[in-house]
Each structure stands twice: as structure tokens, then as C-alpha cells.
Image: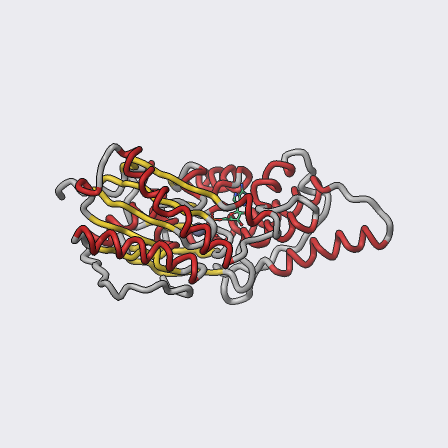
Length: 336
Ligand code: KG4
Ligand code: ZN
């Protein structure tokens, strides 16, 4: 393959991001403008505010990405962009911007699935990683166990029946008064808590061993807290956080390792915001070592939403012939 620079854009939720990626795996720049401080005031992402902020920031973020990569649009060969799933108004900002640049510069346009982006984050720091492999994608919106057959070819083995893992983290964090986004905060205070303090239920779904369910666990945590409050008993947020986290991590590890075994895979990766969780990384690493399976995970900055991962995914989509037209639209419920 000849040298290819991709300008990648990501705006599906509350991060406005642009990156320049060389040949799918070398990140020349990765700029992320986070809106977290704005949404924090409301305890979660407010879609209308997200779209407006994306519009305000996107040009600046792209300029910075080009500058940091020390390139101009003349050096860009392909424009890649997330077109779903996500918040429709937020996605539209990135899609419109990508189309405008590609049209003005007469460049190929490649739309990318957000989850494909998360999975592809693993290619960035692991030059040896190639399909087939299994990947657990756990973020604020998704919990998928995916078999990556070939580049761009995915088979979904399991998914959550209700809340995503990150969503459960965020809701539990809110209940114990930690604020948004809860994942990193629960991760941190769990280190001071006793994971065996409270026994929370782990959901396993009969006949669908790779599927997940986190709403029962979330309710159990909320009920426990309300029960303590009603009885006038105090509770230790660190103990609750650690006990909740233990239940989440165990289910994620058990289902993943079952799939690894059933599919005879010797490569396993994690991706998505929750993949930056220190307890999950440690538990997955150990479980993979015990099975003699090679374990891959992105650095935290490539776990949460970013555009470098979209550039990595767009590269392999481009190589396999994917091209989108000027009618590319945001698809909020896009299927993998
Ligand atoms: O991938 P991401 O940035 O956005 C989505 O595509 O959803 O994931 C964000 C989610 C949030 O729910 C956040 O609480 C969670 O990832 N998260 C974590 C950690 N860092 C982020 N969850 C657990 N532990 C962490 N260290
Ligand atoms: Zn994401």
C-alpha cells in the first residue's frame, strides 16, 4: 500500500475530536475537546448542548489536528468520519464537516461505525494485532462481545439486554454522590473500598451466555443505598463502589473468557471507555494469562471517545473499498 494520511472526525457524543492517522496505525495528531464540564452541571449529556458545542469547536479542533501533525489539507488523502451510532444532532456536525472538506478537496469520504472505531483503537499501539480476534467493547452506550473475523467483518456474539456497563457506572456513581462521569470516580474510590463488603447479584442470561444485563445490578445498588438511608444507617461509598465494580468486572471477564474458549481464540482485546478501568484491565490480563491468550488493550486516551480510532477504522474500510457519497447521513442507531 502507498502512504495514506487520513483526517478523521468524531462527534457522536460529548467529545469533539479530530486526528491525522498515517496508514491506519500511526497517530500523527489526536485532538479532543471535551464538553464534560458543561454536561456535568446537568448530571449527564444534554444532546442539544452537545450539538451546539460541536459546531462551535469543530473547525478549531481540525485546524489543531492538522497543525500538530505538521500537515495541511494538501497532505490528506482520505476523510473519515463517525456517522453512527450516537446522538443525531451531534453526529450531523461531524458528518457535515467531513463532507464539506472531502467535497471541497475532492477527497474520498469514508463513514465509520463508532464501535468499529473503538475496536480499531487496538491497532494503534499493537502493530502485531491482526484479525481474527475477540473484542469486548464496553462504553457508556454499548456493551458488545464481538468476533473480528477480518478487517471490517464483525460478528456480534453478545450484547447487553439493558444498560451498558459505562451507563451502570455512571448511574451508581450518581447514587453515591460522585457526579458525572462516574466511571473514573468509581475506579478511583474502589481502591479504598472492600469489594466483598456487599454481595451484589451478577446476571447471567440463560441460553445466551455471551449477553449481559446490568440494570438488575444497578437496581440492587440503589436499593441497598435507599435501605441504608431509610434505616438511618451510614454506608461507605468506597465499599459500595468496590462491591459494585467487582460484580461488573466478574461478569465481563466470565462471559469474555467463555467466548474465548468456545471460539478457540488466542487473541483477546478490550475497547471503549470502560476498558480504561484499572480493575477490569487487571482482571482481564490475569484471566488471559491463565488461558495462554494474548491480551490487548488501548492506552486510556484511545479507550474513551477520540478520532484517532476513527482514523484507524477508516483506513481498513478504505482499503476494502468503502466509499460514501455526498448523501452520507447521520444514522443514530447504525448497526455494526
Ligand atoms: O467510549 P466512551 O468515551 O463513550 C461512549 O461511546 O459511550 O465511554 C464513556 C463511558 C462512561 O460511561 C464512563 O463512565 C466510562 O466510559 N468510563 C469508565 C472509566 N473511564 C470511563 N468506566 C469505568 N472505569 C473507568 N476508568
Ligand atoms: Zn464511544
